[in-house]
Image (cartoon, rainbow, N blue to C red; front, side, top):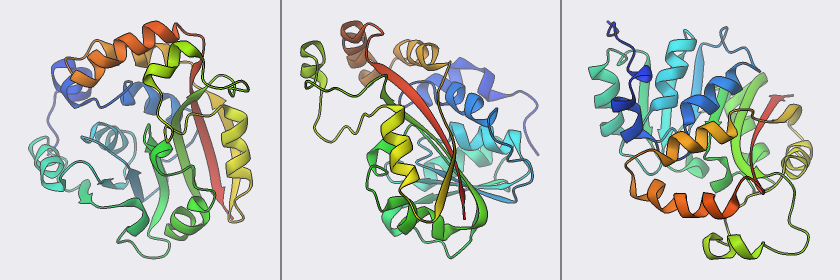
Amino acid sequence: MHTDADPLHDTTFTRPRMMGPNCLRLAEELLDHVDLTACSRILDLGCGLGLTSLLLARRTRAQIVAFDLWIDAATNQDCFNRLGFGRDILAVHGDVRQMPFGQAAFDAIVCIDAYCYFGADPRFLDDHLAPRLGPGGTIAVVVPGLQKEFTDGVPEVLQPFWQEDINFHDARWWAGLFSRASRVRLQECFSLAGHAQAWREWLECDNPYAKRDITMMAAENGQYFDTIGLIATVV
């Protein structure tokens, strides 16, 4: 039995569980671009502390598999159980390159704000995601990125915060990556309107990483970063 109050509208519940720009805002906008209501099983890839899994369970009637490497499955499952979603969401711990799921195990794979950690590999879509979806299966991704690729190197104001493997790219770069996959057809690539608000809500969190990011976002000053949505179908 689900609890009557929706914890996803309670900042005392959501803010401690955010691990970056407000994933709920980003996921809501992404889901406005794709219909997952007919899905029976959805993989929430890189689910973090489970906020997006709860949202997917609210928005669909699918069985949600909440998959993450950094968060212990028992931690997430306990939360889902306490909120009455124990039958709707299954938490699984593991690495995206060694997922314990068979062929065509899911109707859709959703990944909010985690894809840059593993998905920049040109073979990732064909080798790891397409096999878990049957023909017609949906891949829906939100990835942090750039308004435009840096042609003259990383701007000086961002250099103190930059990491070589950060995999921040613009929408054209990500669209090109998806378009090169042989088993996937890109349907849509777009900048999310909620980008700035999602970042503001993250910076309001009492999280040491959010506190660190305040300085970075002040330096960035709305000039460089973007949040990009990608929707693709397995062929």
